[in-house]
Each structure stands twice: as structure tokens, then as C-alpha cells.
Image (cartoon, rainbow, N blue to C red; front, top):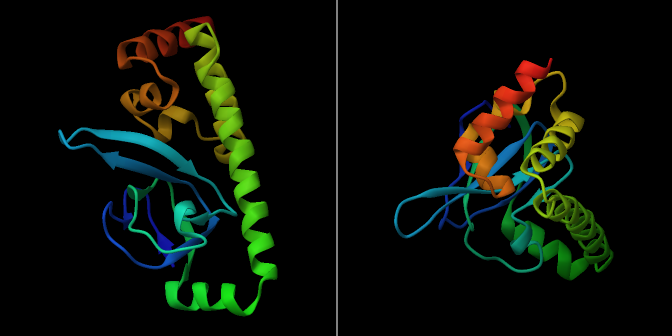
Length: 168
């Protein structure tokens, strides 16, 4: 299936199939009780989501929205979980997938623990570039989302982006 920029794959609280991302990027946005959306994750090619439902079913944690055109394979939940019962080798594949996601999250922690806000932004830009070049981070995420993702206020992100532009 093709999902175009801005289209929703699934919504927070719904239940349904799993998905394998073949190309493109998705953002996972969680709506808190006060109605505020928060960017909580970026899904890259090769990932199967939702991660928390790879072994047992659970409702979707957030809403998945395409950041660019994505090619996505639907994995019906009933078939997925039946396969796990029939083919224990699949559990090893899931463990490797989760290990890869854990490494990606470790990179994100490195981004978040940088002391200087400019270093946080630079690391996130470099990470994104690996997936979306020649597009830029700001082509896909708002300043608010960038700030949420790296623990900065939108105003700080705006100031840092303006400083980068003037240094070019």
C-alpha cells in the first residue's frame, strides 16, 4: 500500500494489523489527555510496527502519519500471531528487529543528552539526513516537533535554525 505525506496509517487507541515499512518515514504522535500532540517516534524503512505488539496484540500507542510517501506492507494480526506459534524462528527475527530499534533509541538518547542545544539539533539533522537526503529535517517536521523530539522549546529550535542559515 502507498501512503502519501500527511496521510494516517492508524490512530491511537485503535487495534488492527501490524505493518512493515518498505520505504519512507512515519512519525508517531501521541495525543495526551489534555489534547496536546507529542511526537514520540520516527519509523524508518525495515521496521515492523507497532513494536509493542510484535509478540502479543495491544491497541496502537499513538497515531502513525506519513512524513513522505511510504510503501507499507500490511501484516494481518491473526496471521502474524499464528505464524509465531508455528515458527519459533520468527521470534528470533523479532528479537533482532527490537535490538535494531534499541540501538536507534540509544542514538536518540545520545542526541538528547548533548549539553549544548545546537549539538542536539546537529545530531538529529545528521540522523535524518541518512534517511531523507537531499530533503532537510525542516521539510518533514515542524519546529515544534523537532523541539519535542530533542527536548527543546520551539523558540530555541527557531533560533538555532536561523543561526545555522546565517553561518552558511
